[in-house]
Length: 455
Ligand code: SF4
Image 1 (cartoon, rainbow, N blue to C red):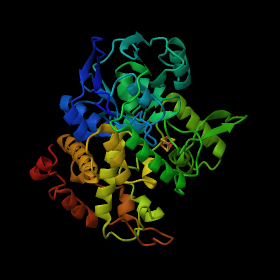
Image 2: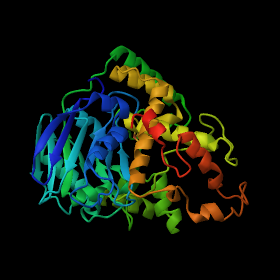
Image 3: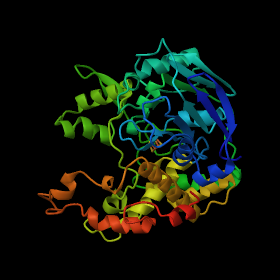
Image 4: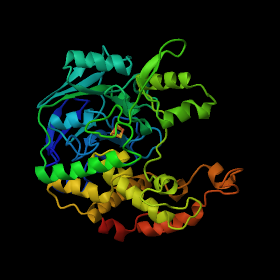
């Protein structure tokens, strides 16, 4: 296979058995990778009624076909499981260098089953894969865990691990890779902690083969030029994930005093969570608490990027949309949701979509995999993934009643500013959205829609 490595690793933590399985090319094509493929692999084997913190719940680490290629910002992987925080399907996305390294070692995904008796870590050294004791690491924060694992395996290895938050089943715990990158949302770290899986350490030596190298190079060069020229994605150039020209990471340092700290961030979410929402106006304690979250392996925010219509409403990307109207909103939401699902599944960073769209993503997928992905097929794959996730949640007793917002946004009018007197008119938009999706009035995908999507 091109793009994909064609191999899945299965690890049963209860009995310690490790096996390798071929990746089904049809499943790979239909669900692309990462978020989509991981959700499919998970759902095939785990009941929607499973308790998230139980031996029956699986944990899937999964990359995309563009992960580890030189595609623009193509360093992402996803962790898929049932969320202990929300009870819904979880696909938590992270960047850094861990996802590419997993592919260099030869694997598209790892499926973890069961629970280990004592803390362990998985050491993947190309074809050699073994479970090792992690008893000496249990209780340690993320940086010393990462340091110790690199020292006892290889300095070139990439580490994804949990900190004390995951070990103690904190429902907002992250899986941290490369010290500061987080598969943060939905509490996936607690599932890993329950499994007594402290870390995965990967080191690989094989690259990712693409189907049409010259054409692929041209598509990624075009995309990179657009990213560099764009006002949103072109001005960072700080610390970056694998193959990223954007480089949105930043390092903060408080040199001394009570809040002495050094680390990555804080980003928008962590500044808001540790600052405005707690009434803290001083940046130093915000930096310190953000660093502690990284060290403990704890999440700091909510997900606002599944259908980021802020982009057209505020930034006018790809075109200006009036934030004060409901007209056409449902269509934009559907488009952004489907495109986001496809981008997440390809292994790209969503940040790229400020500057590139479905055209460029389809071209990268086409030239990398050799499969004739068109723009329509990329969006259709995104729609398939969205419906797959929707069905899982409906089968797990979620319903139309959960398609809502906090009462404050629906009932309490804005007091000041250009939106004074407004609330979110969700009831106006939801029926239109269901209709566009091909769902019934209760928000359930119809049989015809599921058949159309081959689900
Ligand atoms: S834009 Fe930021 S988060 Fe995305 S891949 Fe680049 S450095 Fe990582």
